Length: 247
Length: 324
Image (cartoon, rainbow over all chains, first blue to last red; front, side):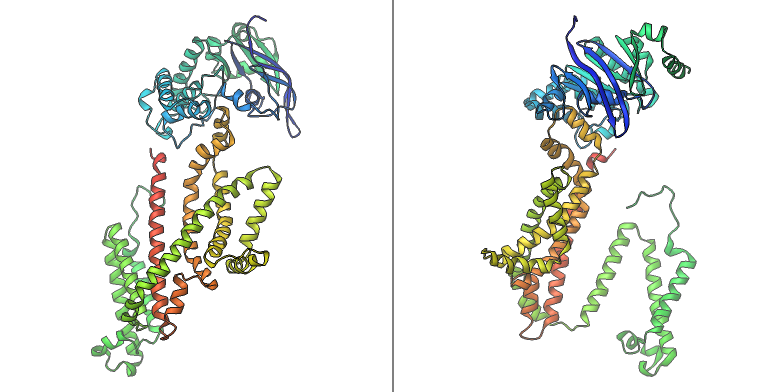
């Protein structure tokens, strides 16, 4: 393989009680690669990326992130997580801290970066997501789109090797979706390795190197955006695409 | 205050049916009691003649007069702006209480004579015992809450046994158990530390439950966001969860503090010279019990009011990050 693998999932299976949530997932994310995962709700796509930083546990198979195997008795999970950025559907900003502090907290408390330097980094990334003027506000004072961009900046301040996006635009009003997608597109242009769970097919077409379709806990189909949208092979993919592209 | 509607409701105390009902009820109630022996009936002498022989007419006249004064008072207060309303009603209720205490014919010189000692010895001890207990109980509560939420069997078992035991026994019993029971094990303990220990353990148990529910009220997403950035448990708890749980924890904790301030009077049974102990003993020699008891009651109330004010100030502080 040419590029270095950042995330490797081999034969991963996961159950919630009796429910088989992930079935024999094999997926490798290479450095610099942009992957979009789509699929109907309940298909396990969020569960899968939450396994990549061990917010969820898998029961079978192996997940290796940056060369470290994830399992229930690992002692260095914090080190793995601090190199894997995650953006949530509901932002999950810390509401009792200002926007600036949200961005400074991780570097200062986890990596021991001095406050002045953390502040500079935070302002730099807030600039990059185009909301430096909101730095001293509290999250509730911001619109949904702004909050999500702060969440992206907060993750970037940790200088992660890979960013996971868990339906970052699903909780947003329609007019705010594009500002978040623009930010994500710029991030992709700058070479960030990204795994995005999203239904934004325009974004997938423009940015993704690979599109993965999941249903019922399995990877049904994967390919380049052109192949995936232009010539889907699987029936379930065709049905799904026809449903979300109808409007 | 509740979330007020933007449409102003009609003032209740200005609605004719309400005023009429209020008038009727007050009049009936005061007619039902025979007030002919009171000072108020004495004031009515020009109208009803000799109060004790005025009979039904006298009762009616007194009831009518009281009802007129009461209703007029309420209707007039209804015109005042909110803040003034609250002030006037507080003042009137206070005056009624003072009038009630007047009926004991308290000896003011006696109170004035004993008050300095009641404060310098009693209040100081009460405040010392309460403040120490509050601090220790808060520390116990954080540890207990974390233990009750952990999946460590030992921690959970110890914490749940602790809360169950100390919430389940009367505080008075705990005071005795610690003061009289610990010496059996070889620890001879003074009355004041014994009292502080009993209060801390008892209130720590209640506050453990308050802290636990506060911690549990925080959205799971906060844990996930913290974890995803590599925060460990202690860091997440200290910097993310507890600061957000505090606004939830503070109102019931304020309640506990006020309650503890008064329950500190229970340590008087083991001979600690705090407010309650002195209130009971100072008046004993001259049989002036009520003087000291009412003074102590007033002092307890004033201290509670101070705690209430502190609580509301802290609540306002934490409302900051919720303001849009």
